[in-house]
Amino acid sequence: MNFRHLNKFPMKTKMKTIIIKPLLAALTCVVASASYAQIGLSIDIEVAPPALPIYAQPAMPEDGYMWTPGYWAWDGNNSDYYWVPGTWVASPYSGALWTPGYWGYNEGRYAWNGGYWGDHIGYYGGINYGYGYTGAGYQGGYWNNGAFAYNRSVNNVGNVHITNAYSSRVNVVQNTRVSFNGGDRGVHMSASKNEQIINSMPHQRATSPQSQHENDARGQPNQRLSVNHGQPPVAATQRPSSFDTHAEPARAEAAAKAPAQRQQSHLTQRPDSHSAPVAAPLQRPNPSESRRTEPAAHPNQPQHEQPQQREQQQHEQPPQHEQQQQHEQQQHEQPQQRQQPQQRTENRPAPGEKEEHR
Image (cartoon, rainbow, N blue to C red):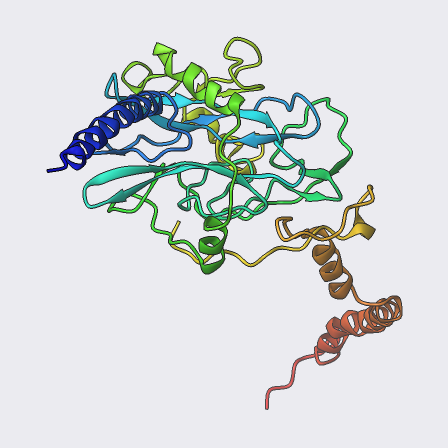
């Protein structure tokens, strides 16, 4: 009897065991590191994230930097939320746009959906992160011929010399500081067909400075919700991981009501910074009304409202010849108004005469 075939099975079993052990070790390392970098991963917990804090946006450090809004992340080791400050990040490539992550509620649990870089702005739960991220799309600027045009009304460009800039009011989709989608207390806004297509496209995850920025925030005890009670001492930074210089703290809601018309600290220009269909693409500002030569139209650029207001004023103001006719008509009517009291005195009796009674 040939016994050689009986030894094949034990050998295969041993080989599988040898191969599987290093794979398990590698997976263990990945899972261990996942708790330190939520930014691109999905996390499922039972505790609702707090409201977004109100904060001012630091000045842009350099031209070509993109604003990435702050968010609440989950620390599984401490079973606590911690605030990852909003920050300016160098664009990973020309044409890149940042779609923020968001918390979503489903069947009693809250899941984190990580953000990503792409050629278009995708769905981010209808969360109003402010500074151009009003709940759907992005109204803070657009790419044109390799250069990014910044909307000054929602970007603090500071003293940085930028190639392209314009000013346009933003349309706030959801004026709320709720930080999660779904449930009774969350934002009610579903992804549009276009956003579903965009989310299925190839994307680039957060850059290394972004991931390090989140990890550094996790290591700051004062950034934890249990310590700051929703008012993180560092709510925004000028550069990733720059917690000590040019940092902005969270502000109390009462102090942020004065500039509320700008969009609300975390909600607007230097803001005090979901249930409706996504707004249609907006048009770029009219070049004839701008002091600068504006780039070509782009779907992500907001609509400029000043030309419309000027046209309405022109339509409401009558032509010069009509104004002259109205002026002449007023002059012609004035003598008639003066004669009215004379007509009343003609029927009165003259002095010394008796009034006849009929």
